[in-house]
Amino acid sequence: MKRYATIYYLLFVLIVMGAFASMAQNAYGLKICGIACLGFALTFLHEFFFSPRKVGQQKASFWVGSIELVSLTVIALIFLFRSFAIDFLYSELMLTISLAVLFLVFSYQTIVQLKKTLNHQTWLVYILAFYYGAVLFFILSLLSGIILPIVATGLAILAVLLVAVYIGLILFFKKLRIGDEAISIWQYTGQMKNKSVIVLIAGLLISGYGLLYSAEILPSFFYDTPKGYQELVNMSNTLTDVDGKEKPREFKERYEEFIKKHGTN
Image (cartoon, rainbow, N blue to C red; front, top):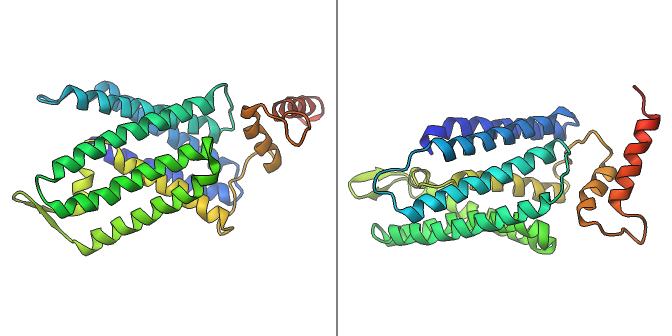
């Protein structure tokens, strides 16, 4: 994780810059976010192929870490295509499976980490429970946004509250002693051999924006196509009728045909 920390930091800065540019009605904003997603995907793949297996590392830990990287790569690539308004078959299914696998991976890692922490300090277990709880609820909020949107907002709010409690604990407990070493809680969580910090930050950005947008505090992202058309394109994956009218996918095809015939060069 430390080898790639600077890269991940710069990629998150790029995403934030792209998001603000898009909210300022600049078409290149989402393209910047897409480039950042590509950077995440390539970094995950590089870590997957070139990070050597450490001596003494358990086989289960190795395979769980590999599955985690593959799932994150798929998710980053899907967000890359969405940033460029590219739709492809089974993208929703691939995203659903990847998020579900990622949830199982972090559930396993949560149990392992909490058991490991019990050997140091009991109260630290409760702090990590808030941390991993936020990570899991962020994943669940994204997953429910696909299969059960009615509960997505509630899960996102709960995840944000858990992050707030975790940050409060970081500020309250300046340092903690693990063996002979005194480190902060944030340093301790950053040393864990997984991508939970990345998922936590990404989940906070996505869910935070979604909540602020729902409250009409932040504007929507800017697409090259009209907002209503973009919504119909997103709905086309379901292949369902809208108010008894033609299917969104059919509308998309007719709209694009119209643009080809009557669009200006």
